[in-house]
Image (cartoon, rainbow, N blue to C red; front, side):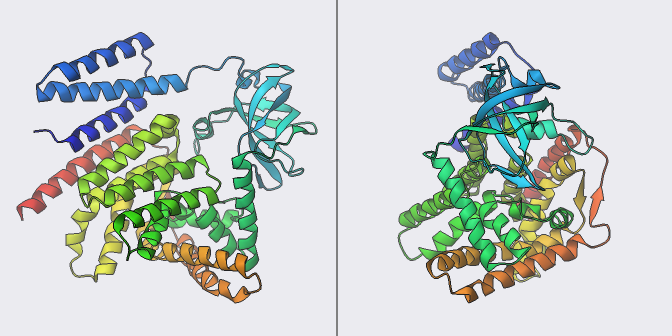
Length: 481
């Protein structure tokens, strides 16, 4: 007998598999559509379970293949075709501009080159002033180039997930043709930076930079040295707005409304997630994290582990369907999904081995070890190495993150209501200071980060196949004892 949750898992995994292989192999659209039709007919006409499961897998795979091909269709009159040229470019700002080291960068959606119709996005680098905003219509002379591929970092792949295939460097004054202020995203980004300014008022550096990263996902204020310490200690994930942050927010609202009916608490947690997404500017990475966290939250209320696993698969499928490029090119997405599946599948296997520890320590050790085992190959693949002390560092850091986020949020709210109550920031300062010291300690230890040569994509695949076999073997062993 095949259960519905198994069908959902097979379809979701096959969809993701279809997107993945479509990035390496091309099929004519007529073959894809014919296959979708045949598998669909077979699914409804045949009664044998095996044939229907094969049809579900084939249907999901070809739908994923078709979705990927639909997104990567070549752009006519693409700005990338002008690589190496200095041209007049006009377009709209489609991101929240960031200023780092006196360079302002933004995503420009190009509509005109040399006063002729054009298309495509570029990552534009320009002077820090004047500051530009989401929705601004700009025109300027810029030198166009293609992202460079280095052994350490595939910059082109990193940009490709946002639909960016070229870089632009301004060589003349940037003219603002229009500055519309009626966009929802404009006001969200404006509010985010205003909130960041308030955080900077009640916390010193680098504590304020860390709090900005935790609450708003802003990394531009983090000193380069501290970013390195985060990487070396294996704790960079705490400032990446992910399903973890969303879970913290949802957990707080569920706890706060724990005395009321479950359905109402769930609604309040959902509203809390929505508030967090809006507060951070509704960036695509945050929206993806909200989808993941929201579906996981809903599944958790069903109190079934298989529902949690299906929730991850469904969330991943939805996010990849929206933007298929994140599956191959977004390291944050890959790490988030891998860590979540690791928590679901590996934590129950580790917990019985830690029977001699107190429950709080046991759970912290088990979840940290499970997430680490699940993400190690991706960390090595994307970042060229791994932290030797990641389990110890995260064992101390992760439990502090939720309370730090919540005290930071509470401090921010009270600070806005009663600005002269400066002492309310003491709790936030104490917690962020502890986090900074822990991260600095582990990041500064000898051999904190082990660098490895570039890794072939084949090795992570082999690792995960062996991990799956190992997990199933351990589950069978535990079930017999």
